[in-house]
Image 1 (cartoon, rainbow, N blue to C red):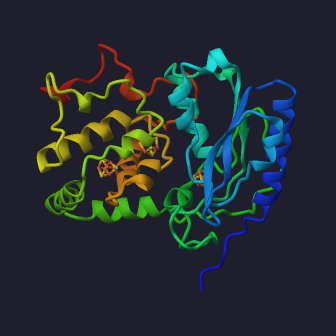
Image 2 (image 1 turned 180 degrees about the vertical axis):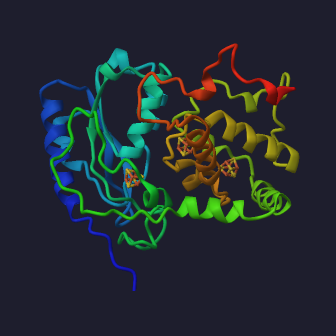
Length: 307
Ligand code: SF4
Ligand code: SF4
Ligand code: SF4
């Protein structure tokens, strides 16, 4: 039988973030706090923006706190400086997105008050009936997390994480399985996955790094990527998406979570991240103002690949 993972510290974290949100809102340090609140369905959680200190007790942190809230900063970026400093609850994986967005000049660190949450993991799905976190129900990203304890935040609740969080590496295992296939078998696997895509673009809408006001893939004069869900256009979309996110993706897995067709999008992201680690010893989301190897160019770079 699968043992539950100890998430009792989440109760302590909830009390701590409520107190901190109350303090910074009532003191005028921030104009709003973006966090998680209980949703209508028992055990589920939804994003919330609170602007009043009296509402701080609505904030919670549980294994169902799935959303990467950095998305709301991307969408609100133009209004943040006008409205004042924003507080935001961040898990370690979400913090990587914020660090990336600061590096890409989408956000300013001084406009944010980061409330980091120590995190042993979250559930794989918001709709699964299980509310207990186990090695079966945990999100695959959490099995290979290297950011359980966010660093560089303005406030982090003082709790001790249960030692030895899971490190089973579900993506790494799946990448290894695919790499053991022949190229033809691997291509057949991805063709089958891409064929399922209905081009709803939920993966793009939920990604904090898809912040372009007009996506290249929506252009029709000239059309860059076929917009209807047909095999050639689907493959083009998935390759454009993976390349555009390479070296930037924080691994939050939100794209994969929201995909209605169960396409393993974060598997592609993780493979790209693995390549960047091997080729450039680079890992996204740990350093601000780091352009990343795919955004840097020097004349002396090896160009043999385009011959
Ligand atoms: S990847 Fe790490 S920080 Fe993110 S939800 Fe999982 S355990 Fe928490
Ligand atoms: S591509 Fe997916 S995993 Fe990467 S940052 Fe965007 S939503 Fe998160
Ligand atoms: S969310 Fe899934 S189905 Fe929708 S566009 Fe993205 S990959 Fe395709």
